Image 1 (tube, rainbow, N blue to C red):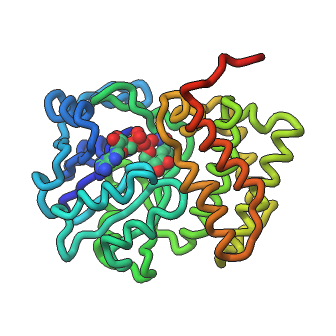
Image 2: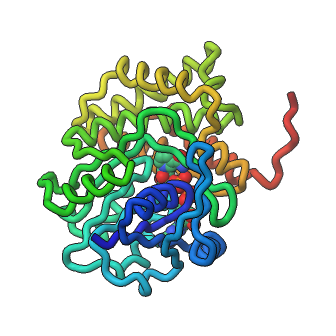
Length: 314
Ligand code: NAD
């Protein structure tokens, strides 16, 4: 199966590295010319838990040069999903399937503007990665590596079954998960709570929940996300959602959330696919989400005011 990874930053490069090392025909496709050129010329420098390898892998900024593929793995950030999908047309044939492992909700709706639901799989992954420099990525994820997929249209076809097998064989353990919506919403709780709240006060994932105020805010965010999940048909209980968030907060205590890194690097955040998407879904379903609305605007305000930020007062 010919595979294209559309959006090959931290995660796309990591998945590409493992797939290429296992002998698959994989091409990285990304608008970041410096990153693609470095990989195309010198190979991908991959720091795999301290084991540094250089992996030859095809990389391009031009989807037309890739031609039609069997599988597109979508790994750009939410804000870029529509642009990436528009550019993907030359890689899409009548059999092409697409699997998204992006965080947040709302990506699938955009992808459906370009592909029928039978050929889209939604998903999530526990793996993490960071880009060190153009052409170079690192993973030092210590937990259980697992990725999940389930077709948007519900019926599992041979293409997706095969994709899950290929990924698993390449050291990316992957599973077909009929409870995908539960898993996606449970992860959204963690992103909307820990990732966004820690970014809004510029601290790590652990410390944001150590005090009483942090715990009150996290509980309020989680209760709203879980209420919206239940209103959309996913049976996510407040207590289970909060327990999951606390488990990950302890496990990833020293981790710096990706939104914090986005803000530090002057990039737009994924708040629109997280708390912002919860607010939008809540509005449609008649579930009030005032705390998530404030947190969404607070993160957007951090983006808007980054040029006039004062040095920390304390
Ligand atoms: P990243 O910013 O490192 O990579 C995204 C890439 O998409 C960038 O290289 C960017 O140039 C590219 N891109 C932007 N517009 C594009 C376009 N129009 N066409 C093609 N490529 C385009 O981000 P990441 O950390 O790899 O995250 C990707 C997704 O995975 C996000 O939804 C994120 O929330 C999720 N995720 C990340 C991690 C992690 O540890 N980094 C873990 C789990 C899930």
